[in-house]
Image (cartoon, rainbow, N blue to C red; front, top):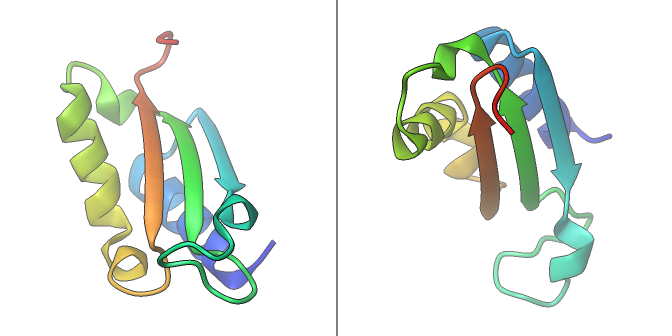
Length: 90
């Protein structure tokens, strides 16, 4: 993948030690739209499962992920869809 994908993967792994982490670069579906960058890596879908999310409301989980990726969200990432789960959730 690319440098931004790698940064997202590294930061989420370090911050949450996920039991499951799926990152999809969805940028090609947004070509020509606001925030789309030449070469992609501007729109991502993330599914992350980690014990750190146990007992935490959905919105708080998303905020935790956004904080971990603050640098990317302030720059190259235009859109990030997050599905944050505790182990055993679907």
